[in-house]
Length: 202
Image (cartoon, rainbow, N blue to C red):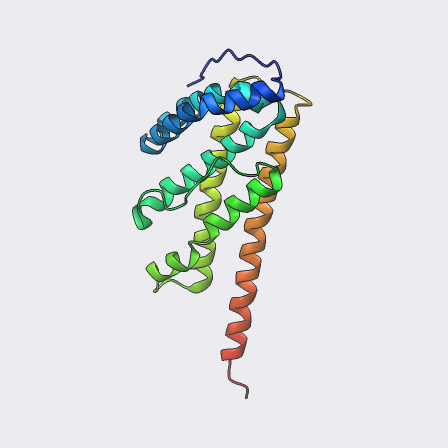
């Protein structure tokens, strides 16, 4: 479903930005709470409401776009992990550094932190298969959340050619994928080293 949104894209002054942040925070909190209780099929519409409530704050600078990407990715991973770890397994916060690097680091670190718990719940699975399955699960959750965020931002008309928001969103996607690859490689290397240490020498 395509959500049609009309937005005022004028850049606010510093003083008006501060007032807008203060004014929209309750609306954002309410929308975020609603999003966390809603089925995945409604998240795109709720995400649009979140952005619409805060659009006048700093959408031109990309802050809200990055916050949306982070929130959507984390919420989607939460949904996937919920059957095993309960609701809201990952705790998301909006008032943080929303640069591509920082956003990607939080997504990767918060999602990969559940590997040990995942491993304990799958003790009879081959260690390498278990690791690859886990990374596939959280990567899939991130990619789904990313697609939803892009759809919302596209509806807002801020993802056109040459858009700095589109560039930052794309950079975040690359950073998260790289982070997952690095996590998988480091864990595989540790597994291989452990297997070699356990191999008896003739």
